[in-house]
Image (cartoon, rainbow, N blue to C red; front, side, top):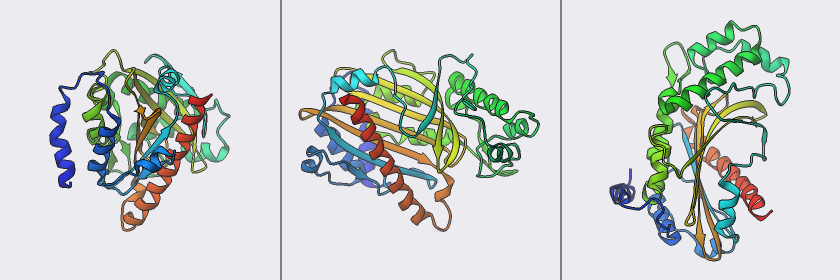
Length: 328
């Protein structure tokens, strides 16, 4: 960890004294990004509407992590962002199904809503073994191995994971079984990702507490929503569980999406978005933290470079989606 980051971390203690609704100073926010990521942000390019990206790896906390940050000025007042996002994220781009989940009693039935599994998918899942092709716990592999109905078994697995996380947060996330003796802990990855969110700790400590310590920390002004999602990831059907949080007030809108269960391709993901007044519109900052074992090993350097670029492209697509929603 470099000295600049240590200085930022040492100053986090000061954030404890910041009121939950203290106005966020956009320029101070930009300076903190520069200090943490060791970059210089082009204010003129930002003001012109150009998306700026930070993808050099200084923000990564684990070998199996990819981090990309991007910033964009959108000439729309913050009040419009608050209107759009205070009630939930509008799933559209790249998503086939988003099933809202309201209580822990809900049964997850996302599998099959977008159409039945293909014979190829069904056979692949039914015969799944511990490894990196699928993300299941040892108990879940056993459920699939004994199931007569693969779709029903998948819904059972996803429902169990949803209820466990909704009730117990990180403690409820079962590890993925990679081999007989090796497991991958998504909970550990998400804890590390959240604790590395220095911008949250400095500028939105109330929201940080809700994200880091769910469900024990549950401030009234942070909303929680839960979704089961089917999305296409690298041309594979992927079933994902998403915890969505938002704190929307007159001074800022802060949003997080946490993929605490992912069926394949990557392990877990956390996306944090800040929206704060800037010039005559809104500064939007997104930080995507994606964990995948695909970027480890002998080719890790090249894999990280390619992966960060792909995530940065994905953030740009989200910017387009956000801008479309707030200008409608």
